[in-house]
Length: 427
Ligand code: HEM
Image 1 (cartoon, protein in one colour):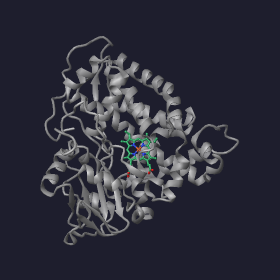
Image 2 (spheres, helix red, strand yellow):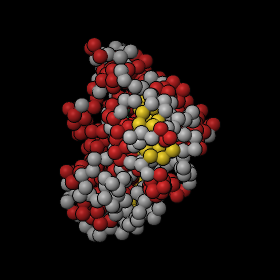
Image 3 (cartoon, protein in one colour):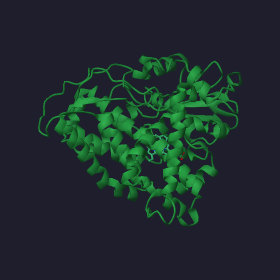
Image 4 (cartoon, helix red, strand yellow):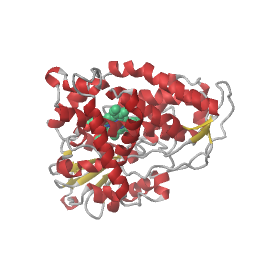
């Protein structure tokens, strides 16, 4: 039942909200290390729905979050044109559009994400993982984020889009910068903003160069998108789609591998149990779901109320920004008992990939990448070299910045002297 006294509306922009209006200091060291303590504090005070002073809404409860994500009364209408650039995604991005336009654009971009296509990438991903991990084992230590997760995610993305070998180093540099652009401009210094703009332009040019009959890149995504029969997109749309796939899929894949291994190193018993399975790829594949639950690389799914709508008895006026706090929903104690504990026996129905119309298109690919990378790394008994790790300062994405570990030969099965077990609220 709706209580009319609870009706809220807001005129704050998403950027203002993320920078100034959150009920915690998202850039503080404590919050960067673990926002989960803050989520829990807000949940304890306000329940599953929290209103900020400017009238925006944070959704922290699992069921409430799931129903907003499934509900087409919450979309992106109000932020479409102006704020799209804040995400570093071109304005045409279907990440930020609503049905029916969204449905059409998503349908056109689905080709590379079918189970068959993802499976076809498996040998390439496995080969890349093998070579990266072999290099790290030879050195005896590695930064899993910089030396394994980033080159892997970049290779997969380049493979997907069909970027030739010679362009890949530049592609990787630009892709990293594009992802920085996901944050509100207020959080990025002027020089970095300029670098992001240049990277966006260079990426668009490179992708455009892959299009057309003379290039020979007939299997790359840009060409596939422009030649997909009645579904085919315009050249500009194909470029925008590729750029948004990079923005949506690069840092997130890095995050799953980095955050996931960090969570395991913080829970040595679970890591040992997993390692004791071989580790088997099937066991790691299942574990990845719990890793996605406990420390998801995307923490927030922003929406706007397109019409007046209810969540959990609160009426939301049209135009109000609604932040679906995926990281908080994934630790809702009503759904996940003892939510701060990594428990690989769980089969969690987490919200790390979102839900509903915008459910992550790259979920199968991200799962495969993380499963293969983590299986290979865990096989070599990783032990953390730093007591504390730093996370990126993003508001939407959350990624371990660096994760240095030592690696051993395949048969060294000793109990890990890993990061201290983390308590409540820790990743
Ligand atoms: C662990 C890795 C990943 C995570 C945690 C993740 C998370 C998400 C989330 C939460 C959404 C929904 C956003 C919303 O509802 O506002 C989303 C959408 C999306 N993701 Fe991912 N993602 C990952 C990897 C990827 C990859 C590898 C790709 C592509 C190569 C990708 C492409 C997309 C696209 C295109 C959408 C938009 C779908 C739509 O709007 O219909 N993601 N992702």
